[in-house]
Length: 277
Length: 251
Image 1 (cartoon, chains in turn blue, brown):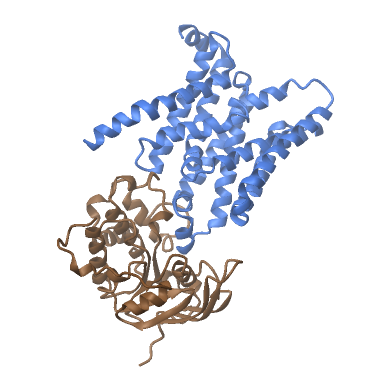
Image 2 (cartoon, chains in turn green, blue; image 1 turned 180 degrees about the vertical axis):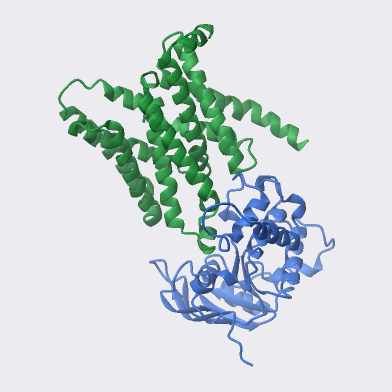
């Protein structure tokens, strides 16, 4: 641990990594809270995996993979949103199809791209230690967009997440806000890919929020708590992985998963007993 | 004086793609009525409410709310959905849930205003749940949660209140509380309440309509054994709710 702190003080790449972890924590705490209370983790998973398709195509065309990821994420969010709104009885089948077809497109395009594809693994499993200044700025901008939208439309998003039918009766444009919610989740997925990779995105999106749900009295407080937890898990995972040279993304997920188990089976039952007595 | 009815169903048929859920139902709910809508499960009671709310459109026939299409008069309708519709572990307080009834008033971005908060406090006062306003939903009793849902329906000052099985998940004492509350609200509101508990609601309502795909009866103020038989298609034992030994003792 001391070794990590010393390195953190002197090494620029570690400072970038820690900062990336905190920016990712913010996004995943805010959007993860919606994903958990609206129970759309499966939809978010579909978006995350479809992103590989966009990255593969961008690779093949020689464009920036992150731009490809962004376009693919938003397109997948809109498509999944339509499925959710129109064909809900076939939702799981259609999203599973998008999930795997998206990945397959990515793999095919990457295999047709000449050159050495070392980066593929880093998109699947993340590479927080390679984050550079441009990526940090991109992450901060994405966080800013998400926060601004949440502050502006929190009431509508909350109403759609809590009781869609009642929101519709009170004149809320349910379709619009459902699509907006999924697009924001898509931005978060892109934000998190750099840190934990698209395979592990779902864990970081759901675990901090699920822990926060056990203690928070409102969705707003749940977001704040989940953001703090997400940032702590990211930096703690980074610290744990540094000494023994473990893969950082996977270690972050293990830290979050361990904390979730601890909270669910030890801490939350205790606090609940104290509150009710 | 012939004021238009609060709700009018004119030869309404509805199906979700399969056999009809409602067939040729014509029913007027007068202004100021307190109507109990009874019938077996799957008899189309909830569907009738959803038609009145404009959440679904009739396959044939016409639905009017205060002589206009339902969507045009949604602001005049307060709706209390079924209990089972909710996940009680959602992190939201009673006050924040009640405020959602004001979304039609304060659209656009930003937070709820002072008028919204005052309306919420008023509605929670009417439903007598001000003391639990800051509590999370999963800490409420069934009766408190049901009254919170009623407060959410009242907050936008509706003219007509539609309730879907408001007493299905609560004990007898709380059930009486709910109906006493509805009785008080009936002084200013038209109320339609869906229930499968015929005996209980007939003590409160001014009119009963019995629905089992078709409208079986609709001018009755008292439901007798014969109607119950027609409605459920067989002889049934009716339990008289007035003959309890202890008025507070539920099962």
